[in-house]
Length: 98
Image (tube, rainbow, N blue to C red; front, top):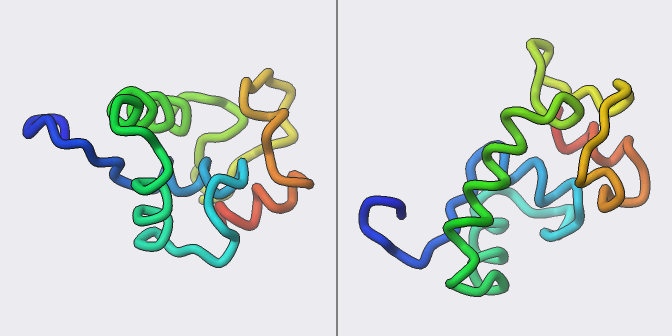
């Protein structure tokens, strides 16, 4: 996507985890379904920047990133700009990460 300048929205681990947690993809989605779903709905002019933002956020946010035990730590006292958008409960966010 980056080198070929394609209008594509790849779904890596971070993108999948975060988009599922904030309800952008159906709960039953796997990564392939999430990829198809998001590519249809995200405008081409936003795909590159949004993808980079989600990947960076998933890696760096102390509340959202994966830890050594492979579960995010949503209860740590850290401000997260996405926390207002998590699906109904934080437990949904934990389930996405397991």
